[in-house]
Length: 81
Image 1 (tube, one colour):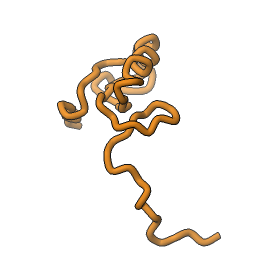
Image 2 (cartoon, helix red, strand yellow):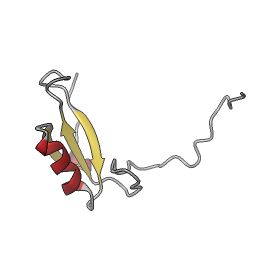
Image 3 (tube, helix red, strand yellow):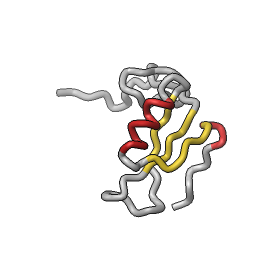
Image 4 (cartoon, helix red, strand yellow):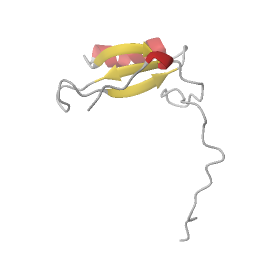
């Protein structure tokens, strides 16, 4: 099987997109989370959310005790480390 040396990225999104399954909307929110069974307390994983999916994704993470913070994308500064 031949694979291109330089894959075509022309269809790749130019702006961050929502992490909800099947959603291609521009992200507006960063949902910072952590699974305490897998991650150290300071570690933050992130999902991105559009306006429509922010509440749904927040609830999904929240009921599991994973959600740590919800911040507008333009205000997000990834923690050092």
